[in-house]
Image 1 (tube, rainbow, N blue to C red):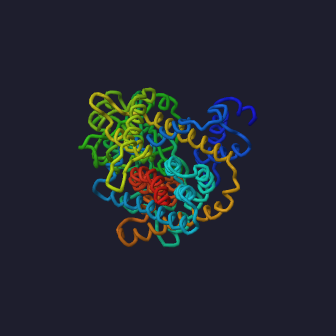
Image 2 (spheres, rainbow, N blue to C red; image 1 turned 30 degrees about the vertical axis):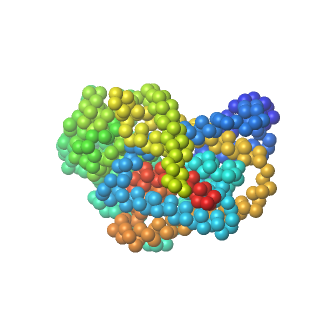
Image 3 (spheres, one colour; image 1 turned 90 degrees about the vertical axis):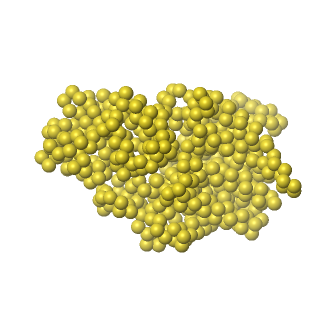
Length: 547
């Protein structure tokens, strides 16, 4: 098989991407390598068995490869997705504390990696691999690969250090808060679901019929079902009418309510309202949600209750997207610049809500390729600029230029008459495809290289990844206890997870916090800035180690 795909241009690269993506989705006790980590491991393995890219490039090293193209797509996408919330996260309010903690965990990780690399004389490439593995950060790896002295060594170290950092981070999150006596449950802002209800699964959608006498004839505002059960009502079916459930809606016997929540929350809802039923017509009539991006100044920092979208426009909020995190639409949730609200309701109401809140996001089928081609061109040009300051020459380099262009175009989603918006599914596809092409090619080249020189540094590198992860997290927690005493532990740990841009960390923290929104809020704020910083960190640590 390897001999066959080696003779066909692109076949070997696609084989690595396909197998690596599947491996990355395999979970064990809640842990997964992710697409990039899986692809890199598969590439190293198949590369060591003889796969090469000569059929694609010939025997000469190409000046521009598919991996380079993937690198450009990925780094630009990181900046583009961070753009909407990057500047908002730096503004006043408690959010700046989340950002500071998110950056501190990276600064401590960089310092520990440099100290470890210097102590064991690991060199710039291996030290960068230690940092990227400890942070479980693919952007750090990608940025370092472009400037380090030995990309093959970097790929090998990162591939093996990544699982070490991922496992270590999750174990620390499970053990250290208990050791410190910290309660990661909700901070008590309002009455919420019973924290003793036990573990909960993913969110589900169910339909309940109103039969409980205590719920009949009472407005939803007075019942307080969302506050008491943790569920939220998306749609009301009464007779022939389908409409969003408003605070002033008075429930009648026989009403059907479509409700979203976790299993234990839904059970409490059924006890309060009535039995679960199957309403095929309601499910078929439920419209697809439209996405509205919040940009209007008067809407920013307003709570969902204050926006009163059901009363003003007849629309319901199904969820709030903040970066890579989806938040439950609680009444007291304050929206931020760049948040995406998933709305359902009448077409006219959604259009009007979009005008008042910001703008409707384009449908997933409408993608402006010029945003990526033009943005990458701008980033490449900016990366070539050089500022001479006597003995020092400052330049952003390719990664820095692409990152800056992405952040700016992501933040200013309109330039004159031209919209720079790209739907979320398209952004996800471009970002994932870019990093998979890049890691596949880098891994194949590293796998084909002699492994003997790595034997003396691999063990210190893996130990370094574990040590760096531990030092970075512990030092950030101690700093928070000294300088941010009033910050709830759940927000401290959410900020650490966001600073390390680790979705596994967020999952662990949310589970410990009884699946509340609170760790997601601090995670999203820290993630927006840290996703940019960890990319720059890959180049910074290489330049520091080179001297």
